[in-house]
Length: 127
Image (cartoon, rainbow, N blue to C red; front, side):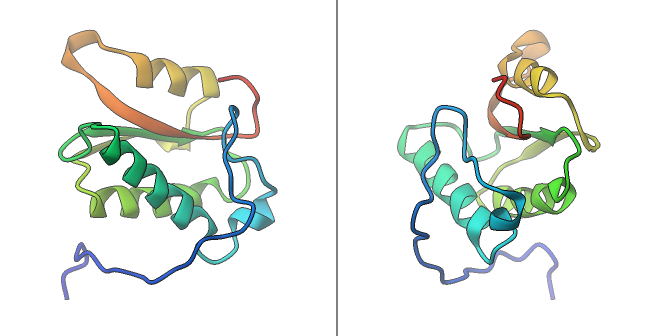
């Protein structure tokens, strides 16, 4: 079997899953519930496509501040990103980058690098 074969998993909306200006803020235990994170990530990719973002073959930045469940969450996000056609994922070593560092990398345009977006895994309120 192809380890990178894309599969489809049936799911349903989760009540109360609404991101605000500071992201999707819930307790870690909630993020660990079945499909909670995956639904949000897929919905984000759907919205990016609808807005005309260049997801196919594009670059996505993913990192966090090392809090509990970050490594597992990063793996979920990467799998969904690949299934959505993302061509390149930039992730800090061990999934670690501070919130300001991830933000700077996402906004960087130096040397031809251009990410279409990113996921910052943190409880920080600093965008």
